[in-house]
Length: 474
Ligand SMILES: Cc1ncc(COP(=O)(O)O)c(C=O)c1O
Image (cartoon, rainbow, N blue to C red):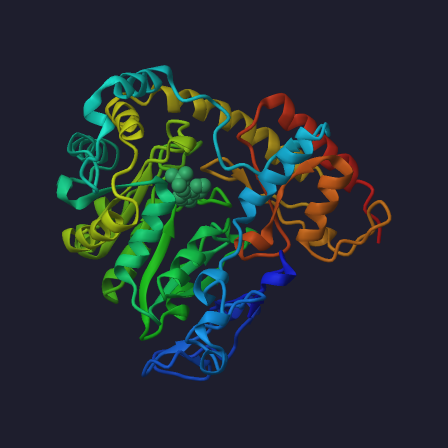
């Protein structure tokens, strides 16, 4: 069991599947397999629940515990379900860095998961025109502008070789809403989702909100943070419904090869599992790596495959909030119904901007990729120069994910950080550099550094970290 160390007031546990035996790192040796038992019952016949959301002060425990009978509903404040959600650690680090900067401290931020480039002009121009068109001042179909859905279908065929009908697409308020709605549409209480770790911090929260149980499968730097089919199989039970597949990955930048992708897809098909595949970093791959779309590779998977994508990373459009789901028609219809009550259509102006983005070429992302690739090589080299830091070369996205396990407990400027949360805090305080601790991604002992920042800042920031960590003593 893994205890989140980031906020003592909001602790939670996440079921961690037993890793491959040869790794010798059994975290939960009693994990039941296919019908086993031994964990806390959800109250559902045949189900187990390993995730016990903590109840924040003042909230009751909903229907989950003894308090629900004793505590009148009017005495409970924040619901147990929503009260158990942690603040996004990545956004929190970014906000802290920005606040320190605003207070005059020369902080360099490696926390943000967004390109530092502006949105290309032709996209902004399309949005300006949309603002002037009264047609876009009104509600439009909840599932997305028909012309945008058609353009997304065309883009998917162009970029992934996957042919889809616009009725298989739902336009969402960013990739985050796509993930939330996808899990909400396919999970019932107690359904397990296998989540390769290190994972992006939003996935387990979305799964829990949908009543599902995230089951983590950990990969470390020795395998380039890629999980094997054997590890996934060790985590599968009768309750497993979905496997999450993210390549390129946030936070590690890992990219699965075509053979690895195919093996995981075939394993999912063999066991009738659903796959949620997040392709948001599809165009940010370096060197010989290439991103492969699972449903394009394995047509037999399509009936149980949901693709998440969006314009945020490819077109430097994080603030515009446009993403989408591609999936089987029944799932997309259900998610569209949900969205029709939750948020209705995504802002029309943002949708028109996204239309210009996906209908246009890929020149802008090619230029960004070149800059990211240069920074990637610099950051990996500089991080590996630090004693006690091990950073595999990321092949995609814009994150480096070094292990700092060897530095935990060492003395640095009079302090002995006991975990990567404390080390990240020390780096922020002493070097004025913001990084995200691995606890946010399910793996203490690591740091995530986004290299989506200017070259000079990058070198200055990592130099400061080098200087500070060179002082580490036993
Ligand atoms: C792997 C991954 N998926 C999805 C998203 C969501 O992107 P957005 O909601 O900004 O479209 C992010 C953002 O950081 C991400 O890293």
